[in-house]
Length: 588
Ligand code: C2E
Ligand code: CA
Ligand code: CA
Image 1 (cartoon, helix red, strand yellow):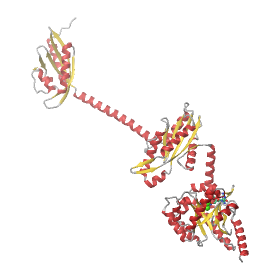
Image 2: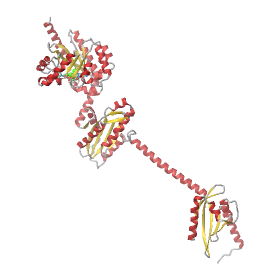
Image 3: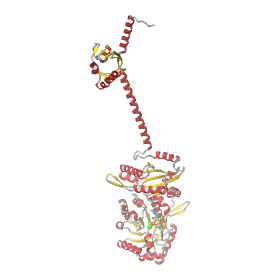
Image 4: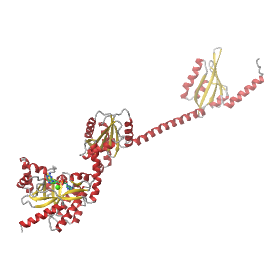
């Protein structure tokens, strides 16, 4: 049954459709391709802002309104629809006469009647949609770049937390983590740590400035990385210390070779602007098999300390013996400071005699440590500790004070020692307070001598040393050059000091009874000294044969086991009293 619609009904439908179209603001068009006739409704004119109403419009009205950038694809879409006789759809911008840009979307159906192709289409404004869409896209892109930036900055923060800003190397924290990782890694059988410390870096930093120090560190970092295998994990542990983790190396000896090569490379000069800086590095090496790595870093550190102690610029491999030694030194260092306070360091005295008369002309003061548990210790046991604690000058001061006190007490007992000689370290000699201190001690002029090691006067001696030497002479304190002939100081330089005495090193004294060459050398030294009015003391006189020969060669004073051993204050007092009595007998 077919519903028959009345004319009235059609009119109603048309009217409603018209209202709906009007409300929706959809424009309707028709394009007869054959006749190239275009029909627009009123809404189309409104969309294109023509300000006109006529039904028939020219094709150019459309093409001229389209944004030049969109024209090509708009036309192509239409041509394609004609060619396929299919549905048409397109989207493009138009430019209104006011200059405003509007986005339109167009849809049309194709009708073919007697070979004539006509499109009936609708077109509407999608500007708001497009703009909204575009805004959404923009927001999305912003959100995406923010996410990328956030990721990058998180990575930067993480990187900074695990790396050293100056050298770019992993830092201590990263190193610790990596050490744990490697120790838990089944594939790692052997693990070694190279602990690298730059020698005297603090000095470079203090004298040349921090920016130079920074350059030295950066250059060291790149040399370390370049010298070690690619698989090595190199970190800056802080300050002037670096460490490298090396796994599955072939042998510890191989590693030592690698480390030695590295030490060699670190010894080369660093250029800073137009200054050349000489640095060196000490390296400690420790290795572990299997899981036992907890102590590894501490062990490498011990080896590094040993390397520094043994003269710097060298490589040492950790051993358990080394650890015991270090513990020993640490213990001793602690005891040293306390011992100094408690007066455990006491002077011993070794007599010096006139070569011809064999009468005592003086005593050398030698430090001893009256250790509460270990008994009497020789300087060889504690001078190193004192020096590493920077307390050698304190020791010297304490010994001098004690010796002067002994001397006073002997005088009260009627015994007079002609001269006492004390050993003075470089640290003590360059102490700016030394002279003031000596003033307060009220030393009787001509009764005290300072023995200064020849090595103190190696070529680049500070001026304060020379001015102190001059001040000492003014105080009536004799200057003696100790261990003369052992330190390669320039003889001319030493002579400039005009010392009262040279003490010829026992290394030069010992061979004179067996070597003619050595005897001649000793004779020449004596001759030069005589020419300059400097007395000569021979030390290490171990036999009577030496004593006789040295006397013949012209030495003025003899000191050594053949004459007298170093003894306590009480013993030297007895000896001095005895010889004083003899002297009275001889020369009443
Ligand atoms: P030194 O100044 O060369 O002192 C002489 C050393 O030779 C002393 O060793 C002495 O005991 C030893 N000696 C004496 N006669 C002979 C001998 O015939 N043959 C041999 N082979 N050795 C002999 P000591 O007491 O062990 O002192 C060692 C070094 O320690 C001293 O060498 C001196 O450089 C240093 N020293 C000692 N006391 C002090 C001190 O109070 N302050 C400073 N700074 N250094 C000191
Ligand atoms: Ca000496
Ligand atoms: Ca000596």
